[in-house]
Amino acid sequence: MNSESQTDAAETKRWLDALEVVLQSALKDHAAERAPLLFDKLVTRLRDSGLPLPHAVSTPYLNTMPVEKQPPYPGDWQTEVRIKSYIRWNAMAMVVNANRRHSGLGGHISTYASCATLYEVGFNHFFRAAHGDFPGDFVFFQGHASPGNYARAYLERRLDERHLQNFRQELAEGGGLSSYPHPYLMPDFWQFPTVSMGLGPIVSIYTARFNRYLRARGFQEGDEPKIWCFVGDGETDEPETLGALSLAGRENLDTLIWVVNCNLQRLDGPVRGNGKIIQELEAVFRGAGWNVIKLIWGSDWDALLAKDAKGLLVKRMEEAVDGDYQKYSVEPGSYTRKHFFGKYPELLEMVNHLTDDQIHRLMRGGHDTRKVYAAYKAAVEHAGQPTVILAKTVKGYGLGEAGEGRNITHQQKKLNEKELREFRERFRIPISDDVIAETPFYRPPPDSPETKYLLERRKALGGFLPARKACAKPLPVPDRKFFGEFLHGSDRFSVSTTMAFVKLLTNLLRHPEIGRRIVPIIPDEARTFGMDALFRQIGIYSPKGQLYEPVDRESLLYYHEAKDGQILEEGITEAGAMSEFIAAGTAYANHGLHMVPFFIYYSMFGFQRVGDLMWLAGDIKA
Ligand SMILES: Cc1ncc(C[n+]2csc(CCOP(=O)(O)OP(=O)(O)O)c2C)c(N)n1
Ligand SMILES: [Mg+2]
Image (cartoon, rainbow, N blue to C red; front, side, top):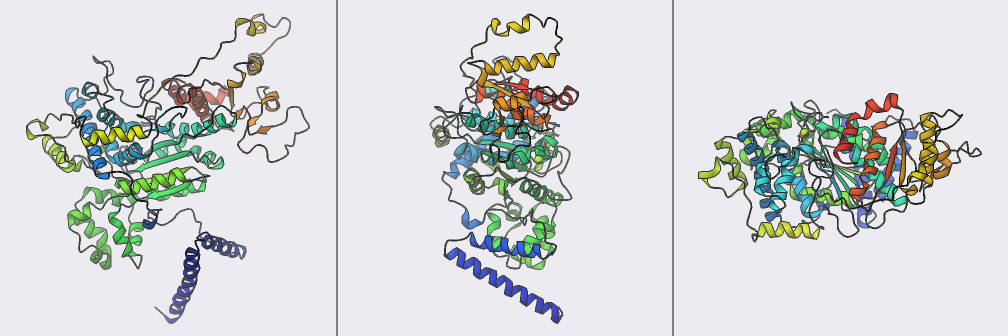
């Protein structure tokens, strides 16, 4: 180091010390917001001076929540771990059994293995079922993790062994279970189809928006449902997944919580082998106005990070790419010691007290019950923005050599006897040697502490989930006379179908009983169809109302936005409009309330864009 840079370093230290003084005094006065304020002013001043500043869209590769802010765990986590282990086993056994009997039947083991903790913390502490007037939280589960949902319903005694034996065989005697969440096939169970990647995420955003619309128009009141959406990290490559993020940010949809299961892998291989999916997503979500909670490291890392005075560990965490992290999950601890910690002698020393096995088991955030709880609690309490939790996990967690972290894991459907024994040992499943090869299901008895705990938790949260109950009161159907003018023809005048439709819609909007239930949804084409008169009549829904004077205010057909507007003007997004159509068309099941959506689009573009969403609309029984 030359003398000049020594001076620089000393000066930097003085500045940092000064900032530390501000921070400490702000914390002492319980005025922690003062430090960021000062920092903001500093940045503004620097920007005014024309200096190129770094873009602050991503933060270091660390957990967003500091250890000190982690709340105590409210549950009996040891019992919860046992419950989770049984669910893991049964989810695996379903797929293995089904494929042993019918080779090629399919199904997935490794997705649920990676998100079991993310689900279980939700089930035990957060997901509220419908009860009384409360419609329940809306939970979009990751489609390929369905064996985990079925295995839990088996422990809850909503399903029995026969159902599990008939996984993917709905037509088998006594009924079976659909491969994925399909309300059409299991109309009392599944609420939201999610398996065509990207559609669950975009529908969840528009569902949150539609729930606000229902409140603004006086159809709903009381506690607001949360909308949880579990998303695969590979799934974020679908344009539908990220395409509507900014809408959720702009409209402050703080009922929306996404959990991205960042197991770093998709079907064929790594999602971002040469980069970091969590860092990339953080920037995207932050830019779109979301609250981002990164959940990367489990509690085992806390002590190591506390010792990392020089920031070497963080540096190493940032250097390693996702392809490296995948490798660390597959190789023994000795490999991680040598290649991850071994890069810097001081880091190597830091883990001297740990055995190879302990190093291998240094947990990732998404598998750490307490940290998942802390992240969920922060998400539920966050106001003003939607939240995304980026949770780092291992794909095929617990499968060991049968697939943990391996590229083939997504397609793994068989385990040999040795692998089954290892699985049993690791998760302490009480199944004896003589039957293990048959992969029997395991369910603790009704009076066991596990069953009692599980049922008590669900009772406290209002009941079981997922569950679909369609109990809306039917609407009156307008009688034939109401449509009289359309049955007579138009005499001498020629009328286009579009004109006739618009007249019909206008009449329906005026109908005394169903008029209010009509939901016209238009992706920016109302003027083309001659529907602009509706702007003024029923208004365009906007949570902010109209903060400006519209340029055409003097005209009859002015662009009128209102907090209780009835039209949903989605802008140029057929996929968004179709998602809103689905949300409105399922209000009868999700809110016990019939709404009648019309999606009006320009056929030349619209149809091709939304074919898959239309299929979903059928599946969800919109
Ligand atoms: C639109 C669409 N394309 C392809 C598939 C097939 N598919 C099923 S799972 C999967 C990989 C999913 O990876 P990721 O989203 O990371 O989920 P993970 O299983 O890793 O949690 C693919 C490509 C699909 N279901 N939907
Ligand atoms: Mg993945």
